[in-house]
Image 1 (cartoon, rainbow, N blue to C red):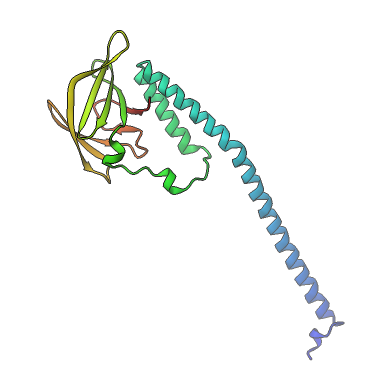
Image 2 (image 1 turned 135 degrees about the vertical axis):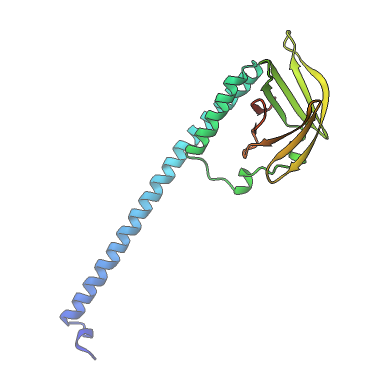
Length: 193
């Protein structure tokens, strides 16, 4: 048997001491990682409900602002929500919950608000094959304006729809979060009643 393997050898004692130090350092690292993980979980448990409540209140304000017909302010609120959500700590959710699939089935029944070229509040709703446009009367009631318009999905991957107006077809693109329409003449925002 080699000398260093003998239990009373100095080399054996040094080897055991080195092994003990290495395991202690490993345990310290593991405890440090555990503490960091516990801290991060505590932050998430605290911050996520606060952020969720904040976004919920912003969404309520957005609905109220749209109902009041102040769509310029509604656009600012929507942009603020999107910026906050991009920067904030968010709850871990399944990827399937994060992804809404743009399709005809999703689009039918969605409602949109915008200001027309004369700064009048407008609303629209996608129905099967038609897009109905409403304007607000002086008494606050919403009335169908100029009938309905045909529409068709041009690209599901790019979230593009062509609406056939009297003046000709216009292709619009929905934002990635499916809450606004990009590239339109007006700023369209999705709303729910």
